[in-house]
Length: 282
Image (cartoon, rainbow, N blue to C red):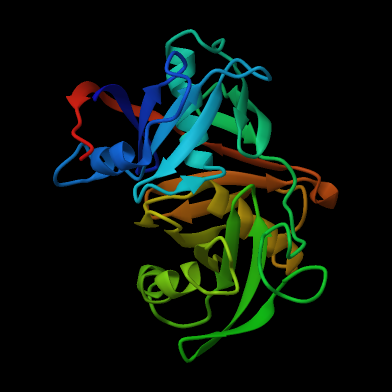
């Protein structure tokens, strides 16, 4: 199979964008896995297949590096918008893109970043999903692998577990240690993205995310949104105020509207290179 792709990244979270509007189906998972291999392929955290849509100018399908499908990817969506604007598939100011979360409005800012209306967070356990009693899982005590911590479960179209870490260890070490265990915690039936956050004195957040199907990444857009939602739910940050979220690859701006009715994420998306590769999926 011959694949024409464009590699883009959002704060180091890198993707291969492939135009599949004519093919009518996403890149097969076994091919996506080969493409994402950083030693034997092109290398990436996932493959973004651009598809035709009856509801928007185009649709995005996300395949993780391990071949699994993600319902949503914030950094990936910004990359698709940048790719589409560069090709005239969306106007310079951006537009709507259909995702697994529904049709989302994406706007290019004067600074060249992309601002995405990510929709309202979902908190009910069945919608996250997480096996837990009650109407939500907010700052709930959690035990895993002999560790005790508090966890907030949020869906931004994909499941997230946010932990405001209180240890002295670097967040990256905490993500490496607990991230894989949380991803496969049986209480999350569709696995989960595990975010480890800390507050800064200036009101910003530090965040490292262990992503479901990709592992430790430089940035996670939906993870940043989930972290700010968790910060609002636990009284750490107010509604309606932009919060800067510092990830290993750089910073995103996230705003949770009053009443949790909408979450806005703004950040960069940059083209790396284009190429054509022949892939043997066997």
